[in-house]
Amino acid sequence: MEKKIAVLPGDGIGPEIIKGAIDVLQVIEAKFDHSFEYNYANIGGSAFDEEGTPLSDKTIALCKSSDAIMLGAVGGPKWDALPVSSRPEQGLLRIRKELNLFANLRPTKYFPSLAPASPLRQEVIENVDLMMVRELTGGIYFGTPSERTTIGGKAGAVDTLLYTKEEINLVLKKAFEIAKTRSKKVTSVDKANVLESSRLWRECATEMAVQYPDVKLEHMLVDNAAMQLISNPRQFDVVVTENMFGDILSDEASVLTGSLGMLASASISEAGPSLYEPIHGSAPDIAGQNIANPLATILSAAMMLRISFEMEQEAQLIENAVDAVLNKGYRTKDILSADTTLLTTSQMVEQVKAEMMAALETVEAR
Ligand SMILES: NC(=O)C1=CN([C@@H]2O[C@H](COP(=O)(O)OP(=O)(O)OC[C@H]3O[C@@H](n4cnc5c(N)ncnc54)[C@H](O)[C@@H]3O)[C@@H](O)[C@H]2O)C=CC1
Ligand SMILES: CC(C)CC(=O)C(=O)O
Ligand SMILES: [Mg+2]
Image (cartoon, rainbow, N blue to C red; front, side, top):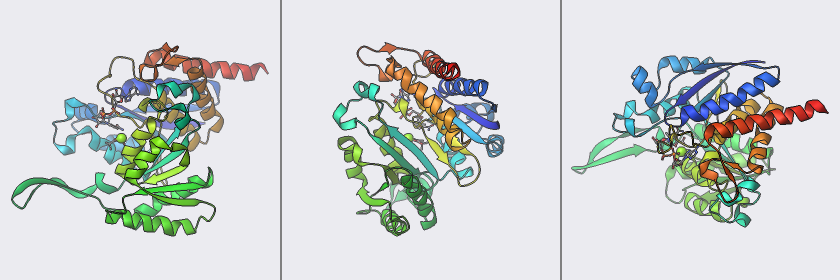
């Protein structure tokens, strides 16, 4: 099957991890009857350096005309002092808005062989399998005004947290639909004891639940949710929440798997291409050293195959290969523990590819 993929490596470790994901996709192309056209474009700080903007109209047009988008990460200290509109992160926020990527799906699944890599006890993280559904195009990351201001003659700053019912209902519906295919429980996370936008969110969730009698809805305040996520994570199935809470809670959830370098994501639109990226950032502290964990990005590519291209078998081949590599004790530095073997980024990619080939040869030999 012919598919056009826009590839936006971005900054820091972005190019290293994206190369890993594309290498893996090339194995899929070679072994199945698929052909992927990879069209590279800039985003973030590297886009600012080359094109004078963190996201050019050319890149947006390329993304809109593609079947899916693979993104690495953006940002870094080199660009931190730029005016807001030129910051790398604005490129990411804008692509999400331009493509109407209203829901960001961030699955967190327990990898048995990675239990020693987590600072949490095995009995706490065992069998965790939750799906964070984060609202992605509204809330405090997009509200205006967002600026420096003067409050009562004193220098200050203002950000605006704003949601329409329509925006909230769109992401809630996605969460309930996903819950129907899983363990049929939605935990809606808010701060309804303080924020008006959260009270609206809670009202919408309660109303929506009526349409899903098979799905159990639970409300949880975000501060409690942050604690419950690491003390009793197995209680969660689908967690749905607004943009900033989801951003923070999903980084926290990654600790359940052993590393931020393990968590994949899919940013979904109603119509049009979806975007796939690891949940982590550009990790400037380890960029360019070939030591970053490429697995979150490789698993994001698997999500792309499953969700955008309906290639379930191919997605599973990648996911099984990742499991197999981990079971053999191969580790990048972030997930290293006793009695495991340290690999570089590129060596890890080679191991995943080798496992995929081996699995296919076993099938062919039958
Ligand atoms: N989606 C995106 O593009 C995101 C971009 N950022 C940007 O990234 C830059 C750095 O932000 P940080 O707060 O440091 O967050 P970060 O997620 O880049 O890194 C946090 C920590 O996790 C480690 N880490 C992250 N990914 C890893 C991987 N694949 N393998 C091994 N270790 C990994 C890093 O080395 C660092 O110690 C900032 O400019 C920020 O704005 C942050 C989050 C998301
Ligand atoms: C620019 C930020 C909103 C990126 C981020 O932290 C994320 O999407 O997880
Ligand atoms: Mg984040």
